[in-house]
Length: 253
Image (cartoon, rainbow, N blue to C red):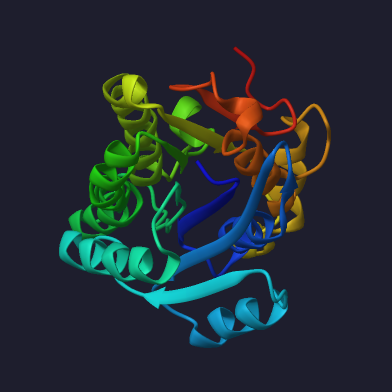
């Protein structure tokens, strides 16, 4: 197995996803060189172009594909194109996600279904699409981005919490199925990370949230990206079916 790994990342243009793409494209440690990355996005063509320009390394291949992550057909087509460009796939990071927050009394069926389809169904779509390739080569690293909200819940986020809790259950089940094929499947549960979502919070909301974080600060997208890099490295060969919280101590169990 080559030291150079080929990765596919969904939801790769903003926040945590953007940091993951840059981490995998630049990372060179733990006996693994991540040099080739294909990322999937559904909006912001300019963001996709910016990332490709920022990763200006002649030894790095970076590809962008626009697709609806909730569509199984588009996932299959996109993975097929990505594998053709990359020459294979060793790593999948399922990061695509949205929010449609509202109290249950006001939440519409459409808001519930949309969040479940993009956040949870996309994980099924892309995992299913890469599985045969990974099984055939008897190697793969799958990392699913969940959330601490999927562990503890959050008012106004029943749909989001359900989708992230589903990712955790999915991760553990698929990890058991693929363990003998040298394919690890893990999840990361970020806490409150400095992204476009947290920028919308009022000062009062931020203060309330910070009280529940022992480290008294929000995390950075890079904090999550570095854990992704670790889970995809040789140092994590014996770790599968786990959920790693990256939350400044917010959830301890």
